[in-house]
Image 1 (cartoon, rainbow over the protein chains, first blue to last red):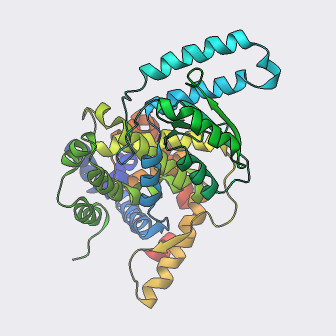
Image 2 (cartoon, each protein chain N blue to C red; image 1 turned 180 degrees about the vertical axis):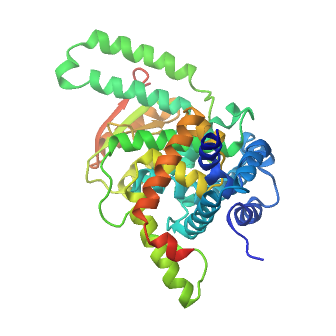
Image 3 (cartoon, chains in turn orange, red; image 1 turned 180 degrees about the horizontal axis):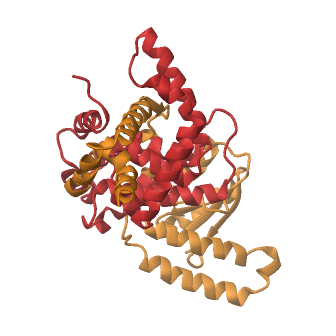
Length: 204
Length: 199
């Protein structure tokens, strides 16, 4: 019986030393400590360990700026949906499956419907530019393209970046429907661009 | 009077929170108040960084898992109903993320897993004693399993009770007690001599 009380109190000692026991557990430990020199000695050891742990602090920089950057660039639900669809679209338009024109056209039509329905995102990151519309152009750049190249090419379209980079390193852009043909022509003429295609049906 | 542990943490948390309690901060986070989220981040970042460092033992993973954890907090703040303490909810997210991250990189780093600094400025005499204990603690902790390290850290540093730790690690309270019991045995063995010098 005494051994049981000892074991029970000994088991609780770390939390007793740390001050995190409730009143009932604390009473059990204190009743035992009053008659057990071994546990009293062990309690001193626990407190020394706690002191040691309190002073041992890993040197990790605060990453608020990094996290805030992630929050602000996180694409909206619409863009993430677009990303998924665009990746699938990209697979469909690879040369090996390019012959499947019917499937492609069907997919583009379906993707267009999905994108339209997703144009009002359920989640918009704070600080993010409001999404003016669903993505209607997908763009890919050469691997060695610099950030300035990307920025210049995208700004030249007069549209808004609404997603990307996707896993396939594609970017999703929304431009005004009546400006899409011109935007596509500019992107396709840009030396840093490897692919620029409409993603919700034929250009106007 | 020397402030230790939870009391010192509480004081610095209050400073970081700008006078708002955690419930008020979370309500503002739900309303997508980025300043409130920054305050919440600054309260939890040091605690999570330490907890995660013990679990994953890779600085670059700590940053990644910490960011992922706080992203989940930001995105799912609405789903927290107050059934547990906010700290339990956030630490449970961090624990799950850390376990996933560890499964991708299961091997611990060999060199200097604890890039540590002493949080107070000790006297030269204290410095020697502290340094000895720190070295011994580092070595001893490195010899424990990740789950043992988590229980030890949550108990000794974060001042959490065994029920809260069980909630975080999604395991029975008896498992927490057993892990702590074995971890203490191993720590005591590994620190043989050092702890007596400290006392």
